[in-house]
Length: 266
Image 1 (cartoon, rainbow, N blue to C red):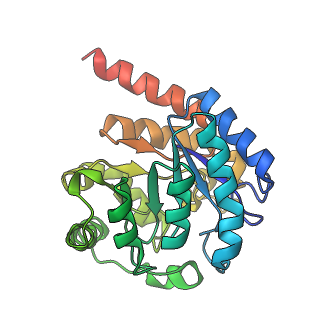
Image 2 (image 1 turned 90 degrees about the vertical axis):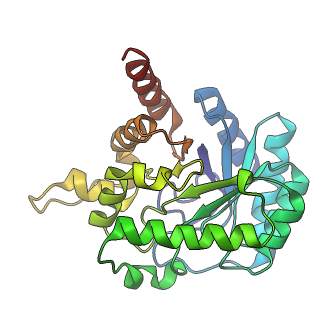
């Protein structure tokens, strides 16, 4: 899953694809590099980010979804708003990726159920402005798994068919570096929920912390974390993840290909 952020304030690429034409070209480039689907988002969810209004999010997202879908690209829409999900699906999106798992907008679950498209249920505890304060766990793997199970039950009760669900542990969302690492180390526990697993580690803070080490050096900037991202992608592939969500596709595609080849040689 290649990422196209149609935002001026992404933590990763800071507005490089904010123009519709540039965003569509970026999506096509990611497909050429090996992306199977392209995730288009118009609202930054980095820690501390403030929300944009629905009209602005629609203005950013829908033309890009339409442009990519018209080129035959499989598109997912990264949104917490039902109205954006509905219009993106009408424009050609094939999947809705909601980082709140349907908690941010009570209209999301009915909208996705009516659209009959797949839905990503991510572990989420609150909006970006205060999510760091919510990163409190006694056993992060057990708690994230239990909270995801509760959310899955609610989504299914709301009308979305179980076979359309994908789960995501929400790396970086209300999590500190040690929490993210523990979840990556225990992806099997998340797969045991019985649904396809999406892993979205790309360029995130915990990778910066790992690369900085314990010498007190500054973490490398987001764009210098792609090799670390590819390492997590290989681990996720080995653990049977359905997809990995990444900003730069080629290194991850190569890493996944090698992981699969090793699996096949056993």
